[in-house]
Length: 121
Length: 141
Length: 235
Image (cartoon, rainbow over all chains, first blue to last red; front, top):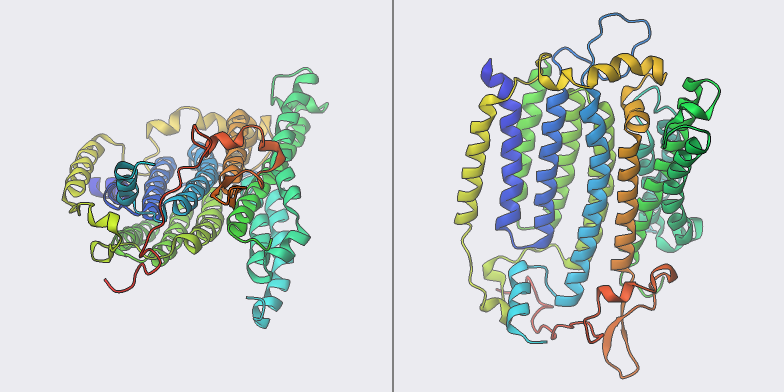
């Protein structure tokens, strides 16, 4: 039963570490952004997991019903806005990638830093 | 993609449905799942679909860049304006209770206007971002 | 039943994430990210967060994928593996084996999993989070706001300041994308290619050039890359 109660958190940690691994081991900038997105989504899943109550229902009030258990609405509100802000910041990151590709001709992180270090402008 | 007749016909049927559904999500958000953020994204998805099938030039004719840019800022201004209005009416910033005689009605009006502001901003922002990505590096637009 | 669906979705998510790590084709990775978002939306529905699921399905699987594909149109869909590195510059870059990142990730993950030993069980009504402000929202919202959807009333009324800030961030992101993507490379009057501000919206004309011009007023243009065009060709 204890394992069942923690399973969600373990998968969340696994996803977070997968995102983290992509972020630090892959040199391709688009791949890094994907890793960042996976990292971000894992935090969303963590928040929503915290708000869930077993046997509860979505926090939309039922007229005249007694003793209905509602899940916690607060994490939902926080994550709802975070998702939209997340896609906006992803768009800014992608715009930066497009500009980097135009300026350097590559989006591989190590090639970019090698160009910066070796060639005096 | 403009030579694909099935895509073109299907898009023409689907786009108005998506727009209508976005408005339903917007105004039914008080009673069911939905609200300004979702409605704005769905509304912009309709135009992005139109642009993918019919091309950017025709979409610009339907929805010029300056309109979406205006939408992006108008929504934030509407949101802030509701806050200022509630200050002028004697309440705190974004305290909608004072907007009508009955505090509950005031809350209703406030939430409606604020969600509308969120929807307009999100719609404007998403379409603006798509326009700038799609038009990048194309001289003919 | 709910637990089974929860388990299955989480297992699918983990599999998709692994597939994103392993693929070297960016197009496939972006499509997998779309699938990942849709699975997340399903998971949110199982966890009673219908509003969040709605947003994730529309944003993550819809808009996000379109933007990623638009970017791939510029950068190409190939990730350069060491064998494919053919440019002069990349020959000088040492090939790193991803052992060190793996160790870092494993250690961090192990510490975090050790930390979950103190976490309250999933779905327990006695968890501390359910005894702070949430009960007040659920009980008083009907009398104070009169809107059945508590998420909407918290979003727009109780935490209106928060949402105002988020809306402003979204707007700022649009401004950032506009500034970044409206600069065009043009020939100046000496026939040299440089970044100009001709197409920048008038609104930004005053301050925008400082972002991409160096101190001498010139973009740091890289030398042309021979062999870049046949990227992905014969190794």
